[in-house]
Image 1 (cartoon, rainbow, N blue to C red):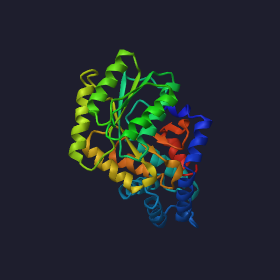
Image 2 (image 1 turned 135 degrees about the horizontal axis):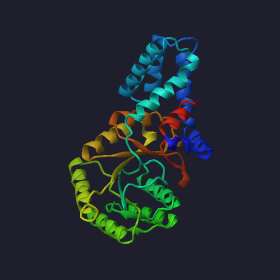
Image 3 (image 1 turned 135 degrees about the vertical axis):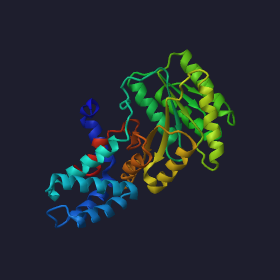
Image 4 (image 1 turned 45 degrees about the vertical axis):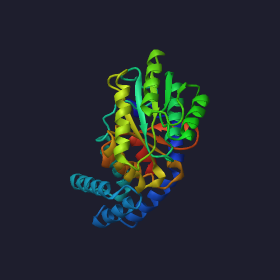
Length: 317
């Protein structure tokens, strides 16, 4: 819980600003749901259900939230609509907490091992390589030595983009020629990082989903090669999703979790969309902790995910 106490004013302002479009959309729908009501009755809950589903929270997660609120209302006897937003924040934050068993949150938190290896997956266009660059920046800013591995070797632009980020941030990028074996790049990266006493290694991987068998085989091969140097690597398989795509992000999460064992999520582009509710639905449906959220173009706009503050900002509390 100490992490929540460290959530400073600057972070809160960035979060509020980044979720502005989502907040306006969700708040207007929830305000409509409770308009003219003094208590939370079945009509309010029906209207809330409609508001949450249309905010991209997803049907299953919405029904779970409604059940939790019904139980709470039953338990606490009388709850007026004036207390409704605080109740909703509390229940959604608790629900997200049930999916979050990770110890690592902020960038300056101690790492469980060295080097700490993160394999980053996600389809092209979701902001995967940009997220890696921003992660590198945040980790370096926190005093950690970072190495990047350009294992998305099928796209020349991906390697080039990662190298540009490496230069901007001032961290080494291990690469090979386009079309090289991704596992070979991962091996070289881990070997170099270990030899140079790096703290964090971020491995970019190919963003393809057209053949899940090939994707699974490729990611498995990368993992196996990593483990020749660091036996328990990767320590985190992070799936990057574009929050602005709403329900399409659910489908991508479904495909990737079938292809490999995803252990955390980074959800990007939340500043340009009214679909912020997708963060709640994806976290709940896939039982995978959201670790980072992207709230803008600047390197500082990638935040460690604080579920309570996120829900407060989304619901305007």
